[in-house]
Image 1 (cartoon, rainbow, N blue to C red):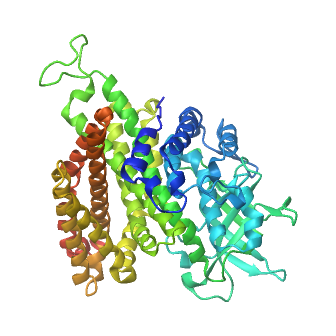
Image 2 (image 1 turned 120 degrees about the horizontal axis):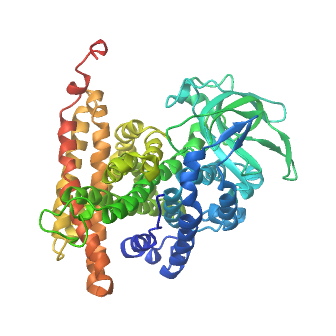
Image 3 (image 1 turned 180 degrees about the vertical axis):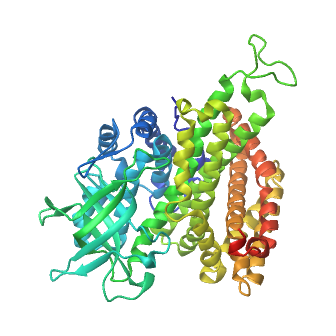
Length: 591
């Protein structure tokens, strides 16, 4: 059975050596001293490694079952969920007034990576609740906050998001679910939603659904969509549970992966709902949840890549196969371990360099969210808005590829369910699809985010990379990082210039290159992260060489990324500059 070891040391390294969180002036960051974050991460690591990870294969094998409208979760999930609640993990970064601990988002993200890596399907129950609670926190009335948030923060009640319908996925303007206004100010919702993660289960007393629907007589299309709070059980004035609401699970989806999470078809039959935010402004409120979810889904790509890599590495060190061409390395055995072979090393280095670079990237992104929310930094808010489709799209595309690489290390044993490697690939696959398929993320990046605020944020990012290169060009040991990053950044700027020159007169020229641009951007982002980590490790070696092996390995891994992975930017630029013609050349009938 696969195992999982929480990467607490590397998380500490990124938080303190690279991001230097405790030295930041962001409110709340002064509390993030190394001893404090170490204690939190070690405790979370113990819970995820010892309690939650062993249930990953159980959830995959058993799945969820629907019996007379009741969803049964896999064996052990209820007890583990109780332990997560009792430990206060569900409200780590939520406001104290609603029962949370008010820790910065960056610490919640570090903890969240471990939970997702240990058991993605299980962690989705609390993750979606966090997102729903955030939407209510931002857009709800005081009464709604007081009614729902304390029990959602504790996960006594869980939450969902209901967007997709059978006939519309991304194009939400086509939705048919209706919300009829009632005399008491509530609404009656009727319709069907599909692919609703955590839509029905028995691990919580109540489930709070956030549902997109149209109020009759409103504007056409997406402008007529509103968001509603629809509880599974109605809530009495004293906070107790009342009658069962008119919302039921009609079916459980049979899925490729995340079997331990209940993915439901939800039927709304005159269910009582309460408007969240303003009429016909539902997407504004829903995007509060979706943007948080997209960062979380990007983290799932990283998390599945990490746990898959850990197991591939252990197998490569243990499995004897063939001899090292440069000389026998295991003379007492019949063969050398797999890890001696250059092509196996290539696969492992691809994985290691992605995982560690992506970890720094997502924690850096989380720190931008803290700057935006806690310090009201509008520039940070604009920058993380630009980065959100890159985090979601690039990290999940690459994360899935890395689970395949890890499976490949096992050879035929990776294809056998007994090894457990296929689950990581199957679970990672959904992250490329939900919360906005990655093609849509790329379109959002190119079509909206680049031009946001007159292109201010992408220009600020270019300047950030330029300044980093300038500040470090003469630092001993940094040339291996600065020169490749400069070259990759020029490729990114050239791609942006191509879109500016060609996008208006031929929109397909930009759209045909959007996925390449997202990946080009993602590689530059990881290149910058590796530059930042190289600078931190060189300083650490200079200040205190007691942990030299860790920092030397970090530098070698970074050099691998800069020489073997980052040059992909040139390929993506060449594809972008080929324009739309190769993509659009065939008539539909010619396919």
